[in-house]
Length: 321
Image (cartoon, rainbow, N blue to C red; front, side, top):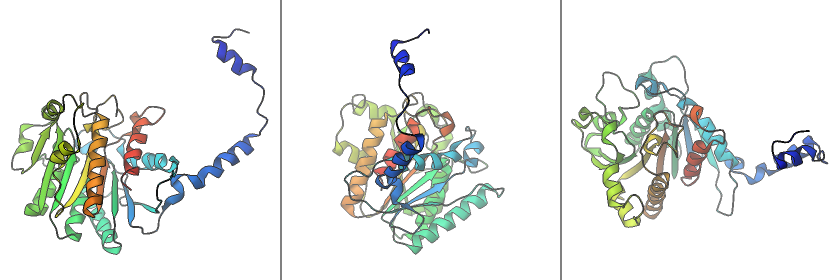
């Protein structure tokens, strides 16, 4: 017999397993009580993950289809994480939109109403919203505008401003929609913006604080030198406001996050995005205000066999709940 590799030859000569496949599967199944999946419920909880498996907004913006599959993939990865030693709480997981033949505008309105009802029914300490396209941040913001009286500050981690002024609404228009809706109650901070990803018209009529990727890279000596004070300056969180952390995953370097609607050839390092997210969570805990995070534009069709992009998002969600 010809062996390509010495270890491959050893594997072929290994004896059959003493345990049956049924016994092995039973042992693996017994671990479910020690995994995050054991905490997931459909019942109302203070901590909730809202799923928006819908990608028409991406297609309307010229992106590649597939982000509708992201919520299910991300939750699957989340369920597999071990419970560990930290304090455990039940987490509600629920779909707030379903794909059907209704219009895009009708879908956004229905999702706004569903989220509004959920926020009015139960006090929420941790809210995670998972798309789908970045268009889903608008129904979330619209619902928050209805349910909370204080100003709403949205921090967008993104290569794109997502403030297009187009004839139709889509994944590139949510923050222009939000500013039109909330007016003086809105504040928008943009982090990681890249000039090649935005038409000049995207800036027209918008009031925003914008931190470009180039400036951040220069300020941090190539993302190697930053501390919590620098992160605080970028995030610019005011405890009198309701602050939302929105991450469009195409903000991240394509070689670290390939499974997205529009791959970024030169985006933010994943490490830096994780640092921003952790700092946001720390401030929400410090200010005793709801943590509200959104994760958008993951496209599992383009993930690697190991699902590293989906797992990276699931890990950040774990830090959000």
